[in-house]
Length: 341
Ligand SMILES: Cc1cc2nc3c(=O)[nH]c(=O)nc-3n(C[C@H](O)[C@H](O)[C@H](O)COP(=O)(O)OP(=O)(O)OC[C@H]3O[C@@H](n4cnc5c(N)ncnc54)[C@H](O)[C@@H]3O)c2cc1C
Image (tube, rainbow, N blue to C red):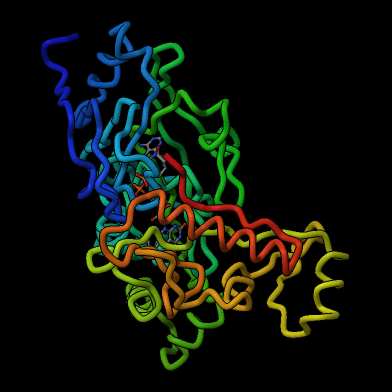
């Protein structure tokens, strides 16, 4: 093992995942330099281990007491304006930067574009992994490029949006072809001519008294809405929305509407229909219910919470019970959003 690789053993991950699951990592590296990844790749014993790349741990469910994989905790720091194009300012942040702090920093530079995604927990490096999004905006809208380290060949390279294959809460990084890639930094193109994105009705309503809202004002409205609706992981363990909104064929949606005329659904450009997972869970009577020490957040049925001392297995048992009920009633199998470790 290289002498300068900060490898630790038997490290508690309780403070490193927002569900507060008290799992332990057998082997753990705090990655503060890309050279640490190269050192792991160059060491035959370490390179042969399965890996868990960890950011802020806000989109993970650790289902085991002990994590067998080598945990690579991304702590690369730094953010800067790196250039301009005719219509945008290019800003880059390294993977370990906190996402919300980065959004705040762009706003302080007078740059709009990321404000609808204020207060999403986690790191910049994880933001392209599931193409994070909120209030009608997604990372891909302002994405320019990113840099990856590839464990398959030990090289570092740049990827553009097409190579990242962004989709709804999806990208190449969530598929086998992207499994060897670790994001080192992300560059965003923030528009010089900014206009507010108020497609989301609740957000539009929150700023309706302001003639021409600024990015700062839109961010403040987003922050206020989120604080009202979502549990703060510092107070109650959770990973945000636990299930993706399912997309079904139009005929399936029409059949459901016969029985459930108030079904929440949104037509998709390809003719399919996106259903609101929270509505489906609520209609199965799960909102506010507990199973052991795991529960469904009373204000938002999409959010599963650790009521204190829950294991990953308990959260998973609750998730499975919800999936089974929703499938039995609506014929749709909900898909978890967080990564299961
Ligand atoms: C209260 C709350 C609200 C949330 N709201 C939203 C929301 O509105 N919209 C939304 O999209 N998400 C939301 N989330 C989910 C979560 O915040 C995002 O998915 C976030 O991007 C996860 O970042 P992270 O650093 O915590 O990633 P982690 O949870 O540490 O990791 C998530 C996945 O990304 C991989 N990964 C992390 N960093 C890297 C890297 N540098 N290179 C390669 N792979 C990497 C991990 O291996 C894992 O597979 C919410 C979560 C919480 C707790």
